[in-house]
Structure formats: C-alpha cells, structure tokens
Length: 196
Ligand SMILES: Nc1ncnc2c1ncn2[C@@H]1O[C@H](COP(=O)(O)OP(=O)(O)OP(=O)(O)O)[C@@H](O)[C@H]1O
Image (cartoon, rainbow, N blue to C red; front, side, top):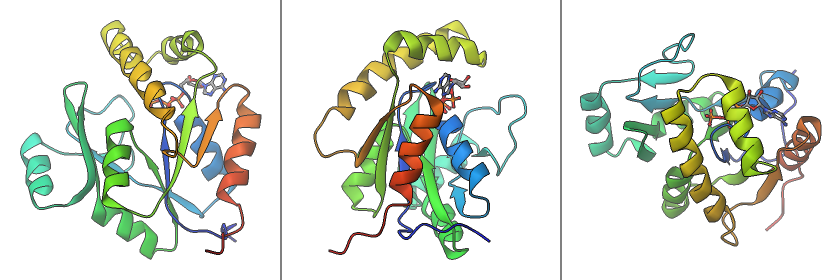
C-alpha cells in the first residue's frame, strides 16, 4: 500500500549540482514505494551512459524543444551548460492523475519561473555543508569533466546566494549527514495539511 502524505501538492527540490538531491529523493522513493513520481524533464543534452529516454529525461532535439516551448507546454524551462531543460505541464498532469505526489528536480531559474506562474508547489532547497564539500562530491561522483565541474561550482555560488532570499523556499536542508537530512525531508513531506 502506498504511504500517501496528507498533502499531495507537488514538491520542488532544488540545490546546487552535486549536493545530493538525487540521493535524497531516491531514498524517499525507495522507502515509500508507489507514492511519489519524479517529473521527468525534457532536455536537449545527450544521454549519459545508462540514462534512458522517458526514465531519466525525455531526450529531444532542439527543434522539438523550442516548438513545445512556443506552444506554452512547459511550466519552466532554462538553458544551462549549453543545453535546454524544461518541465512539461503534461508530464506533471499525467503523474498527478495517476494519484502520485510529483517531485520536481529543478534548477534555480526554473524555480523562479514556477514561482512566477503561481503553480501550487512546496519548495525545498538542499544546501551543501560547505562549498569545499560540494566540490568533493562533484569530483567523487566521477560523472563530470573538469570544465563541467567548474561550471557547476560557479553556478552553485549563484544558487546559494538566491537561496538566502527570504520566503523563496519552504524548507532548507543542509545535506551533511544523509540520514538526518532524509529525516528532515520526510518530516516535511508528511507534515499534516495546514488549514488555511
Ligand atoms: N550526505 C551526503 N554525504 C556524503 N556524500 C553525499 C551525501 N549526499 C550525497 N552524496 C554524494 O554526493 C554526490 C552527488 O550526489 P547527487 O548525484 O545525488 O547530487 P545531485 O544534487 O542530484 O546532482 P545533479 O543536480 O548534478 O544531478 C554523489 O556521489 C552522492 O553519493
């Protein structure tokens, strides 16, 4: 039986690359089966080894991406590291219709766009214990070339700055100890619905 949270509002998880977002919501999915669905983004970047179309991303051509964007098919889209990324409305609607709590893994510009549209969501920011530790994790992960690591670290500084803006996020979790960070996430996600 799915362990459904009292609130079913989609959860937007953001934070610098390499901070452990995927690791954290991976645990959420694993420990609460059939409850959550990751919103699969569209991207024009090439798949990394092991990434599958429709599972990790919808891999599309630049032309197809721009056409969907023009049609207003994205709740957010951004260009990062020379590629386009976006979350399609249809993807969120399909998963919500299936009864899932949708989790969106979104970078900073996307967060700003979704907030501007007034899309109902709960915003969680994952912060690193320090910039040094973030660099260590990015290198330790072994998926990125040096140039990409440097770009991600520069972007991380901007994201950390933005995360300090009051009222942007409903919860900020410092991902130091993984189990403690997980507990903060799960307590937030399963918090009783607020009566307003
Ligand atoms: N609390 C933690 N302590 C130590 N290492 C961690 C912790 N959380 C995650 N990591 C490690 O940090 C690396 C980056 O994690 P992950 O790939 O989940 O980051 P991400 O934020 O999803 O990155 P991206 O946005 O680039 O996909 C991984 O090697 C992961 O195992």
